[in-house]
Length: 273
Picture 1: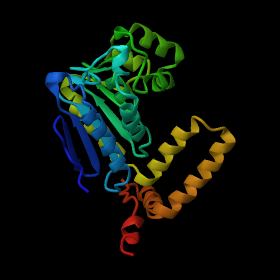
Picture 2: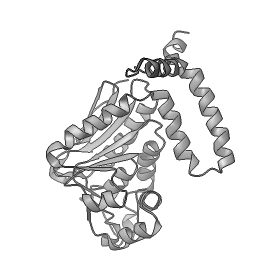
Picture 3: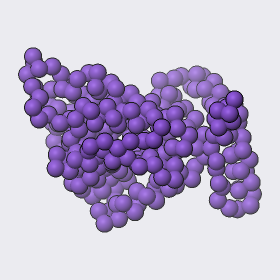
Picture 4: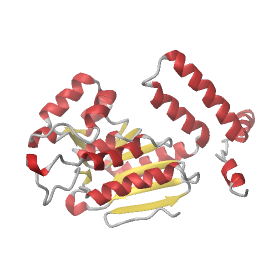
């Protein structure tokens, strides 16, 4: 099934890279419920598509994502929690459970739910114009959109509470200093540097990388003894599914050349039966 664009979200798949671009610059890429759910569905679809090796999430214009589109929404107690719990669950679970690398190219402001979206990315690359704000306390809300769960895991407990309490935007330089951004690039080279970074990820062994990412993420909640067992399982599974990539990696190392990994070759065989 092809990856579909909808109004406000442009999607393309080329050379194993699924690019999701939020495209509502007039609204600072604030997302409607339908758009948020569509991003979730795209990530769930990418999980099951072996042609996808890396997912890139970015924005258009001056913003990455300003969060949920609150136009016409009742923010009172009787109006319900913003965003609705079910919508938040549908969006962020699919992003967090994606076993393939998810890269956020943060081109501008990421605020509220937009910050949550950026935090779901495994790696965040920022332009000099990137800014981050929790925003929720400014309108009396508790921290939503997985921010209170993800932020302390990335920047530490004390800094997370500070950012949530004060809700002041921080710039790209400060975000890089506290580990919220992996790299900060000048505006005029942002697109080029993001492409270079993603190309390097695409050159990695796709099956081995998926298992490695899962070991890292699941290892946060495991003892070391449990991790060793998971590590052994991942190693055996990788050899079963992608032994050809291991052989290619060894050969390329010996021949002093770049390896050409092919990924999972088993699924097309299964589909023939």
